[in-house]
Image 1 (cartoon, helix red, strand yellow):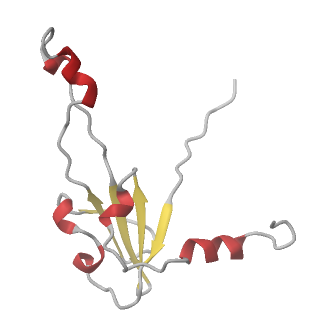
Image 2 (cartoon, rainbow, N blue to C red):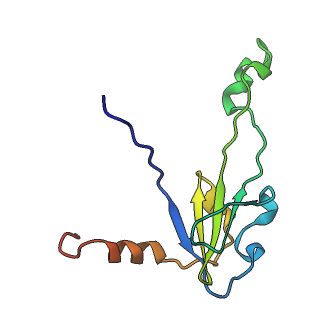
Length: 127
């Protein structure tokens, strides 16, 4: 029996130098209060989790005449961002389907991920 590894696909954003305050980077009004996260070697890290409310699935109305819809329950889509400051640079890691939408428009370097990938891959094996 092989041991299953937990994997997380991360989207990491480099914030432009002119943005130095959390409220300039994160849509704080859409989030619960930030949670400080201790990280090794980093100056500061805050986890912002999107405010959510449970919603009933779109198809639930079909059963509204025959059962109590509370039996179906509700669902939420949890999204979050981790804002990290290290050496006067800010980075944001987005989690969930809507995590990146918690970042304000035009505050991150557009091609940061592409440049990191290009610098991380052996140029002889890249197609």
